[in-house]
Image 1 (cartoon, helix red, strand yellow):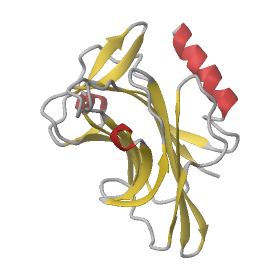
Image 2 (tube, one colour):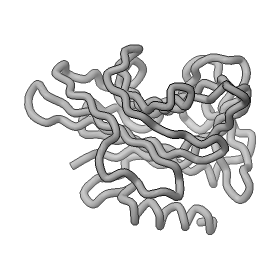
Image 3 (cartoon, helix red, strand yellow):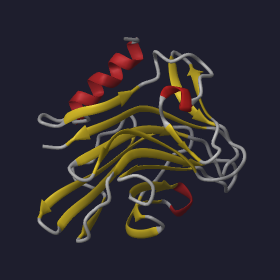
Length: 215
């Protein structure tokens, strides 16, 4: 394991990235992937015509979304799940003037639940499909890695809780969810995912994708 990857793993364990009792069912840090390899060749399901390729980023490898054309692009990964599942990923982007990238992670596939970090709105949001179900203030800094975390957990029959949090890498993970949504409709089975919108016309990078089955 590369040194930086080891440091990330240590940070992950300290801050609860992998909690006791939560079983990782998918992880990908791209270190074993060849540079310029397409996401589809890595068995990701690529949504739309987004150009996702493995790139070298200093000592690390990342999955980079090309900045053109300007659309919403995503990838799906991990097993199909309905509930008691969490997804995390690191995302990186830069602003250009008043144009900002948008990052997101999701559960339950396309049209499921999404945690979206929207720097232009200075907010982190939970969406169900296209509908915003919850929002909280968030101060994003250009040129930094952000960690996004989203989970859906069954509380009882007919009740689920969707919780999301985001924080800048190197800072302390929030103890509590920043934004939460109480669901009463049964979720649709689907895979976890990550999305990006390159509004700032600069690449968006993803790394350290993780899916956990919650206990």
